[in-house]
Length: 83
Image (cartoon, rainbow, N blue to C red):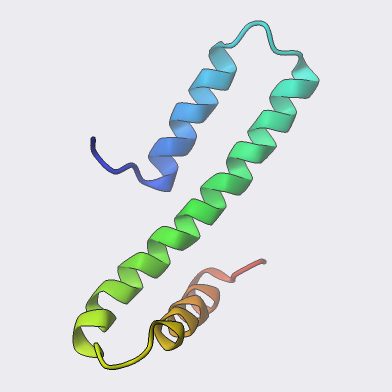
C-alpha cells in the first residue's frame, strides 16, 4: 500500500464525509474538524520525518531526542507551529 500524504488522506476523508448522506450537519462539521486536526498533525509528522532522514544519516551519533527537538524547531520556524 502506498503511503499517503496528509493532504491525500484529508481529501479521502472529506470525500467520505461528504458522501455520507446519513450524517447530520452538526455531526459532519464535527468530523470535518477532527479530520483537519489529524491532517495537521500528520503533516507535522511528515515534515519532521523528512527533516530527520538526512540528519540521521549525517549525525548518526546524536541521540534521537536531539534530532527530534531540532526537527520540531525547524517545523515551528518554517510553518509557524501552533499558529
